[in-house]
Image (cartoon, rainbow, N blue to C red; front, side):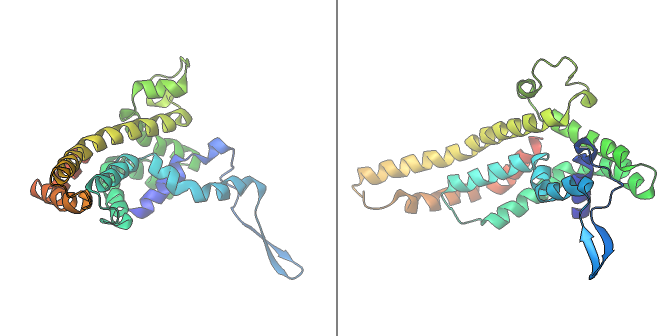
Length: 243
């Protein structure tokens, strides 16, 4: 699956749009006076510059942003800054992202990746085929007002036609919509914990225990509430249902 994700990055982030000839090797090995000399052809330089950004770009084109933001807002609302640790939250976000994106990944595998491996499609054609399911997913999650913000008055862009929406405009519009949706979900998640914090602070103040940090009392109560309502099941189910 991870190999498929990396392949998706290579296909969806269409290199021909950068003007790179896919027939040019990334590295050129030529004999020199002291042995072999390894050089980088100028036409392949955009490839090498793009590689460090592929994971971030790929995650920005998927459901990862919404899921990760909600999970970190949940931890903030609980008031536990170290549990669950970042690694656990990131792992859960990645696994949920793979689950949400599995229909698009299967389509890309059958219509772009496998034909590309068998030689039935060129790299350019495979990139175009791979971009369509990804753009369809992104377009379904993008608000019309966010898309119009980046397309402006371009009459050639029709939200009902995936092919007419350029990826350069769809990507920031999708990410903007995802952040808005994530904060909306995060607000509903954090609100009950905020009520507990306010009640605990009011009770402690009324009892004259102003030296006792409210977090010491509210954290066990918030954890008890979260466990009692089976919070992880509800949260994960709500996130998956939001797509």
